[in-house]
Structures are given as C-alpha cells and as structure tokens.
Image (cartoon, rainbow, N blue to C red; front, side, top):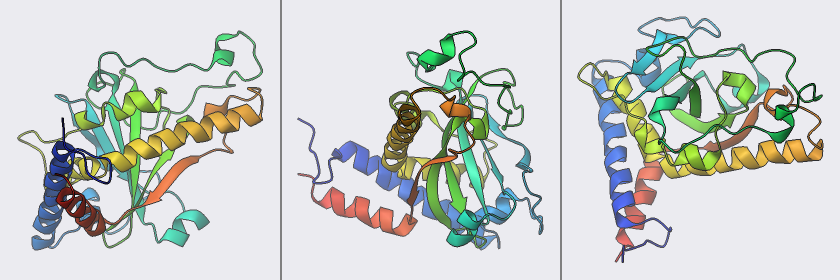
Length: 259
C-alpha cells in the first residue's frame, strides 16, 4: 500500500513536488545571478512591455512534448492592479501532448443547428502559431507575476480568452505531468516554468475542477440559452494566490507525516 500523508498525497507525488520546488528556486537563483528575473527573462531585456504582445516573440514551443507558453500583459485593469500584477504566463499543451484517451468536450446545445447558444463568430486564436499551427491547443493555467518577477496567483480562464479547444478538467489534470520544456536548447526560464507547473500541479488540478464547476454553474443558471464558453461576462473561472516558498515548506511538512 502506498503511504499517504495527512494532506492526501502519496510519498512519491510529494517527493516529486519537492524536486520541482528545488528546481523553481534553482532556476530563479540562476537568473538572479545574471541580474535577471523571470519577468525580465521573458521580456528578453526589453524595458517596456506592449499590451497583448507575446513574449518571447512567437511563443516558446517544445515539439517533443507539445508544450507551449508565452508571457503578456493586458491594458491596466482594476483586478490586475489590485493584485500588483505586471503580466502573466499562459501555459498550454497542444492536443497531441494530452493523454491518448482525452476527448474534446462539446456542450449538447452546440450540436443543434441554429440553437441560440451557437457562437456568432469563431473565437480568436490567442497563441501564436508554433510548430503545430493547426493542432488544437489546451490551456492549462496562467501565472500572474509582479514587476519584480514573483508569482502572485494561478488562474484559469473561459474558452474565449485563449480560443482553446475545450477539454474536461479531469482529462487536462491527467495530462499536467506532460508539460515540459526541457530539451537541450531550454533556457533557465523554460526550466523555471516547467518546475512551477510541477510544484503547483495539485493546485492547478483543483483550479481546473473549479473552472468546470464555474462554467457549468453559469450555463445552468441561464438554462443553456447562451454559449457559455464564448460569453464575455465570464472571463476568470478560478484563481488562487500562490507563494513558492510557502508551498515548498508545505510539501516538506507533508512529507514528514508520510509513514
């Protein structure tokens, strides 16, 4: 029987989280020794960020894992300003990066021709083409950052925000361990982001479940008469504040409670 901690995670999962935590700190410190932060590395040394532009240009994409990400910032918004947000990373997997049995989710009303919930127009394609321009992409999570390069929170979004192909939370959560950008050409920033998604994998899985609950609750209250995935009234579907050092301490404490 696999030992389970008081926090509900088995030893192997906690040890893996701990390794990811060490990697987050290691790559963060590597950047710091070069006089850079996670954010400055994403901007490539630029001192000014242009709203909506993807950084690095063309996104970062790993053809071996089908993982992709970019950093960008929106025009000033009260929500972001309240959290001290400078910008955020969006992390994706292309469809071939998911586990083979994962299937896109389609709302029943969208299969009915002429249904009032049908979208008036196609959703915008947020990620820049990279490696697999025609392959569907799946949004895993976003990481909001402050100007000093510290992670502030993780959040998920409605489909219209990224133009992704929608998969159920359980299918995405089962594929989170497949996000990796760690080939020979990987940068310290690539390694840092890979480690961040590993360290906070349980949090991201929970946020994805909350995302689905939020979306389905919104749809239920409107009796399926709106295309919930394209409804601009619903943007952020779940969110959680994060603290890297506190999470590393939490994992270490959980490990001490595993038999």
